[in-house]
Amino acid sequence: MRLPSQYCCQRKSVIDMAKADMMESLDFLRKQAIEFGAVEAKIIPIEKIVIEDRVVFKCKLGCEKYGKTLACPPYAPTPEEFRKIVSEYHYALFMKFKTQVEGDSELIKYLSKTYDPSIPPEMKAKVEKFWSGWKNEMKKLLDIVHALEKAAAKEGYLLAIGLVSGACQLCEKCNIEEGICIHPTMKRYSEEGVGVNVKATAEKAGLRFTLPFDKNPETFALLLVD
Image (cartoon, rainbow, N blue to C red; front, side, top):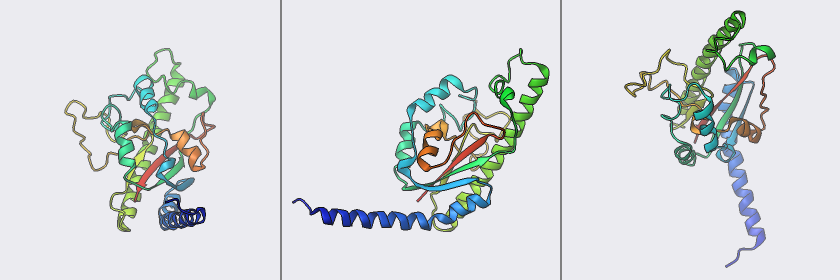
């Protein structure tokens, strides 16, 4: 039997209201993210998280951290596995942070060439200073994600779990040989490493994604919550 269009519209309206109520009930996390330093944060339905196999394919070909940390490919969940995990949630907190490290258009050219012997010594020193600062910023971001997980759990969202952008920065050298993380409760997977297209997700969430960066590079984090 075909239902009247009026009934379908009413049902859709009820569902939309329920979603709005749920997103409002999660707004405490958005507010906390802002308090912790996020420049923008949005509660989004998981349908807005863009997961693509090509992101991990890019990791294999263009990232010097590939295969060097247990939080990145090929040790992280595959995009297919992560899609299944995400499907078990309904909402996520997507956040943008502006780091305190600084760079300019000249420095940007050398950031991916840390080990290139042709880099002028003065520029190499700047690159090393940038990446040292970046590492500290990513550790701070990880602490924020942990704090938001705890805040969510305190309100009954016990399966809230976060992800951060970029490679894991917990150890100078990852315990790859033994295949066991020595900080298992602190490790969080890289968004890109499980296939999240951060740029596309930011656009769907209504957050501006700026690359190349102007002065202080941005970074993003994701908290799955339900």
